[in-house]
Image 1: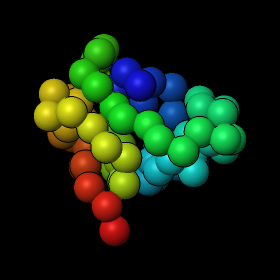
Image 2: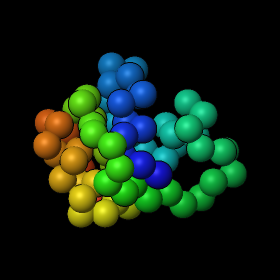
Image 3: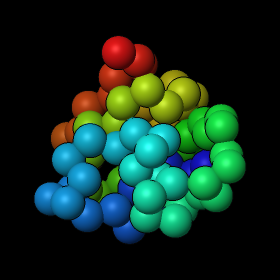
Image 4: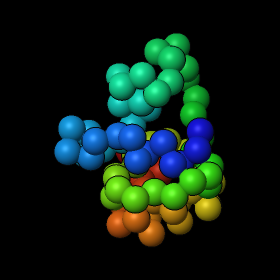
Length: 73
């Protein structure tokens, strides 16, 4: 999943982006079990991404926008 999709998620409504949030807002199907962010697009909104695998480029993009990447709980 391109990391640029984070720009379409309201950070006030969803301060922490998890796979459950992606299902809830309809970015992925409810039956989807695995998602991985990759560096495609720019992130302009600071998000805390938690428990979703990501490439090193995607992690850098999240952090450069002022966000935080957390591997897992």
